[in-house]
Image: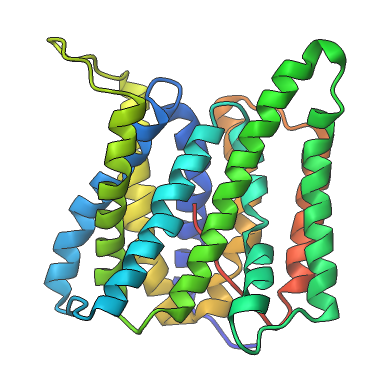
Length: 307
């Protein structure tokens, strides 16, 4: 086993805190801001911070059309669409449940890699992990689909919210495959351009779903919700991107893949401590099954996720 420096562990734990807390911040933000504006505000803040850093890095910007095509696809599948789905879904479920659902991302990557990445076939071990993980998802959904008649409508709403978050996790998996297939490109300019493109992609949807009132003074969100969006943009998106790339450069992707196991429990803990959430027993059963599936399936194959 390679030896990792204390700095590597500090970066790993810092990134866990940033990405794992994003679900809590999103839950706070959607309490007073339309999901579309939460997403666009988060991305715009991140782009405003990352673009100057990328320019100062001197790493160079992409030139060819093929690379730009991949950047647009990654902006759509790795930022715009999953951020919107997860943010919309968190209106109806606890932040901890969202964090648990995101744990299926590396399993979805394995399934997609089997089809699109040469040499990444599904072995028996990976298939077992895949089955365990999605059994965990079924456990998470079961009380929603099996609710008593008086609670059917609320249960269906919660199930739809979970499907939206699960869709976000699948988008991240597609983005992970796109990132493997794209032409080599410097990390910081890539992150800056992807967040800028994602901002441009989400802005029309934000305007369409929640038009800005033509009133004066314009309505402003509460300070708690506004600070949550700032935290999402500055900390969970911009700063997290910088830390992630430094962690990859310092310790490698296999070490960073431990995020897959650390982020879901952190998300559950943040929901309990700061939002007063009360996870149900099936939430813990689902988390255990999903993480067991990830551990089994990721033997010899690691993929780090995001929030």
